[in-house]
Length: 234
Image 1 (cartoon, helix red, strand yellow):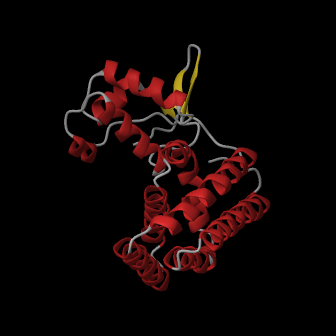
Image 2 (cartoon, rainbow, N blue to C red):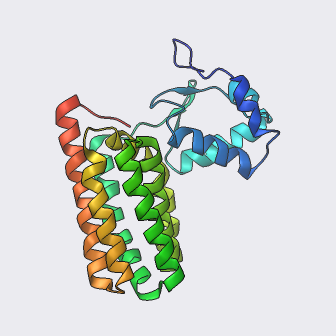
């Protein structure tokens, strides 16, 4: 857990990760940050992370260096590492880059998706509808991430997918916060269904346009949220 100073303290439940090393430590800390288990600007203490993720301090140190390169962590001289916060302007820039690349991926997915893959996307869309009806915000956010990931994978655009995966970790925090905004899932749901419909129709232009419309809506929602709660950092 976090102390009053914002430091990470070990949690017994975290032992479920088991003894880790190398890439698995990077993945575990990255996932904890993207899921909001560590707050923006929160200190990341090597000894605490070592205990929490049941690994060596050297493995934690290497993981923090990699996550610094990914833009999730920042290191300050004589102060150690902390979770890097993302300003509203940066969040908007990320979405603008995503708009271009995910639009391409949606178009390529429309060209290449098989009947079985279309059925899979339809299934995700149906689940998203059910989650909105249930008011399950966390489940909807996870289904949202799954849909975007599958579209990237179906596009077979390896370079775009690699860049987007790098951006995903920085953007998932504000995506979840947006999902918490009253009525936001009900707004984004038809946008996602329109993307699925265009891919199912094998219409690349419509798929790209639907994806760009959706991410444009995300940018608008970010700006509206910032006006409501003031200076936003994620």
